[in-house]
Length: 173
Image 1 (cartoon, rainbow, N blue to C red):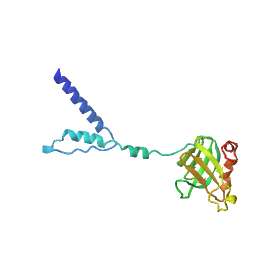
Image 2 (cartoon, rainbow, N blue to C red):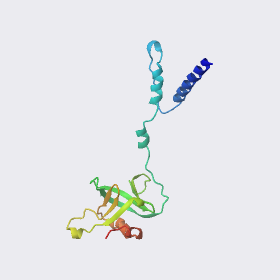
Image 3 (tube, helix red, strand yellow):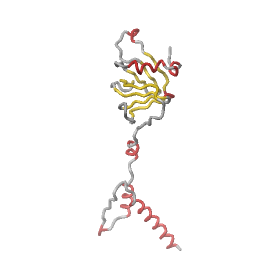
Image 4 (cartoon, helix red, strand yellow):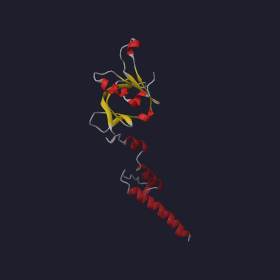
């Protein structure tokens, strides 16, 4: 009976090794030991090398958005944030649930999504009282970041978002 138990544990080891050989993510690498034999440690190393690093799996997730929500406003906007001063140009779409920054007007891949329930404040900037040049027309503040919407020829298009009834209640006097 004791011999049968040992055989069963050996079979379990062989089954996991066969399973590792069937994994197509990476080829098996074996190193020949003394007299052409492989050591038991080589089996463990071989099966571990077949796993995809978690960082690669996370980075491979595409950020795409289906056009299933009703688009309220859309247009090209230049923006920057309180964390990064570099001006960026994206095609923004405002739908019923979020504000999404796309790379262009036809793509479903997006740069950033701001869920509307995370918007803490929308603020119109009055530059006349500041006596400064126009660095941005309005701000969208979330818990993590403040987005500054920069002036542009057609910036009135996105600025009209502020006049929508849903946003009036979020504005500060």
